[in-house]
Image 1: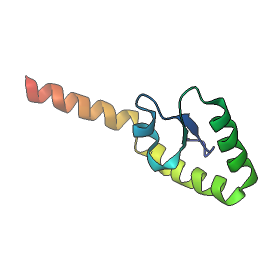
Image 2 (image 1 turned 180 degrees about the vertical axis):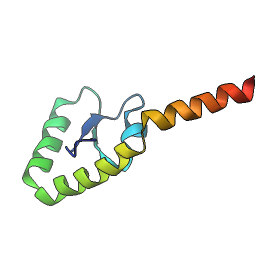
Image 3 (image 1 turned 180 degrees about the horizontal axis):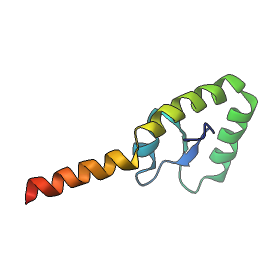
Length: 79
């Protein structure tokens, strides 16, 4: 996602939370749904481009420095 590649992920666990509206989702273990989604992205350059643009922006929300700063802030508030 951070590299601008369209991301397809299963709709299980926290993947939808992390990917937000930038990724394409399919039901976990449904290989036919995954294949259909792959075909849709491969056959639609506009969709792939939009997923790339949205994905880059979504990935920017997850910065290790910022995550570390927030974690430290929580620890300090508890001390």
